[in-house]
Image (cartoon, rainbow, N blue to C red; front, side, top):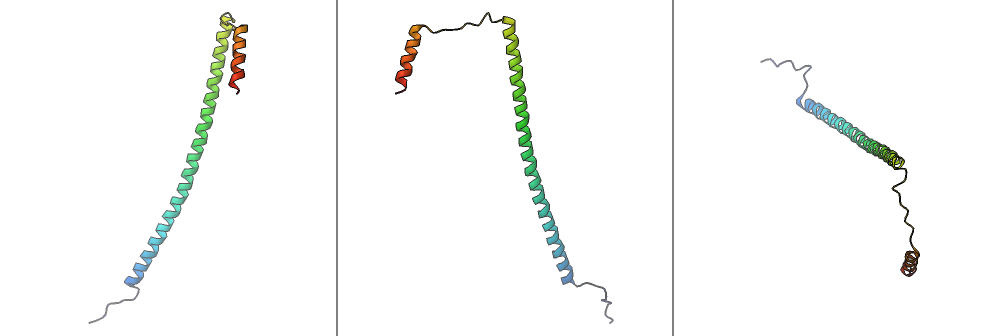
Length: 105
């Protein structure tokens, strides 16, 4: 019997070593990509939080301006006729004076 031509063939140990090496390289590459994605996702979340805060501040300021404008229109339309100034009487002022005096001790 003639031996088969074994030239150019690779042994099983070499195939397994190459497979193991390529597997470890693949796993390392995946881990490096995941770390990069984690950092990017944290940056994205942080930017969203800052953006939400700024947009809520803008909306709050806009709402305050609308309220001020609306209140100003009401006051202009009433021309201050409905506004009453309460001046405390002498007795009330004396009472508040005593309350403030004794509440400090």
